[in-house]
Image (tube, rainbow, N blue to C red; front, side, top):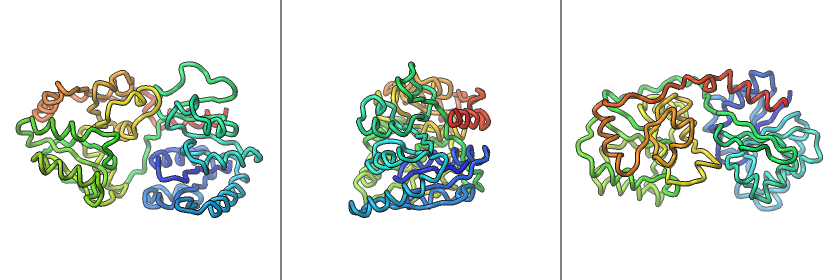
Length: 349
């Protein structure tokens, strides 16, 4: 089957490798259609694709966008299957699905925010062509079937290339990884830094920020300054440049715990996940999560929970080695074969 994976924005590259591998193992001929900014991020698995085509819609004038859209449509209409890696929230994608109504190609999409199915006019337009949606966690599956022709299934994009590991020197330290760029709207760095300032010696515990800390940006400068002013800089390992995927996954593998550090947000309980969850699942790491996430089954099984009151004791217990990892990942659903079958079976329904 001639298949396209389409990601014409800059986000959710972390979902592509798993799908590419699933599709290739099922005998598909796969072409990636990507925003050029993703080129560096796919170097570890681009060889799996039969072809990679870059299409740049960013900073284009309206006429050029229309021309590129028509060109993309002309190519995609000849495929048997299109997988939209981000199937919402972009006018170009909406317009592409309108054009694709006139083609016989099947379209499947990944929905990264499930409330859009109920509340977004743009999503209703997209759903005129896209009838099957994947969500990224079992907890996001609807309790009741959607009306009409819409079908929803879950899969976990938690399989990455076997990168040649980078030599990581952590000695006897305990590493707590916090993946992702500095983002004060989503992550509660102030809580972490202020809490650590109240905790005594934690000689072995280091927090690894797995995202570029750019001091030329407002957020990067704010974060770095807060570490310096609080005297916590020595408890953090930070990177001032882009982290290549091989290095990123080497550091993740070396971490003892993964910490989402999310701001309390009801959306994470009902409509979406953090990519940090899947990174922890991929490396089968225990998570350190705020108690507001304790109703998510996958986290209950693989996490230690804290709130503002219990956090100091939790970190102290970790530092002294008093805690046993809660993560077993024994359920069959964490296996490649299980997830690949679920993904392919849903496409073939």
